[in-house]
Length: 165
Image 1 (tube, helix red, strand yellow):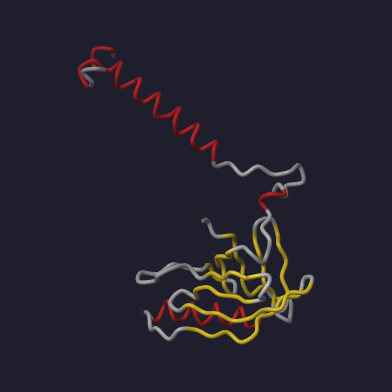
Image 2 (tube, one colour; image 1 turned 180 degrees about the horizontal axis):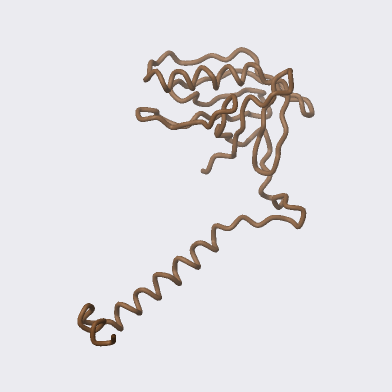
């Protein structure tokens, strides 16, 4: 058996050493990305983002996974600015801006203005749903790292996560 390995790999010790180093590196690297939680399963306090001041990226809109389509310039997202009560972001194709009201668990968006660019039909359809979900929002909850928006009937209209910077 040893002669086959020696024949297949002229420097089998170098190969074995490289393989071991690769797996050690992958083990260590994967440990760096683990999200720790408290005993009750909730994230540690620093993992919970504030609603204003955080850029929120949509991961689900009206119960359907948010997609990133070819030709789309960026994910659908928004940022609430605390002091000025303004919101801005991208709906996927067009940028938007407007105002919002936040009181306790109540959240609503005022008129939203958008740029007027045209993109593929799939991008425009998702953008229409994203902006419609924002307009129908009346309340929210933060669950772990997710911001969940609800309409007046208590239905989930959008789920978002903090965007990486």
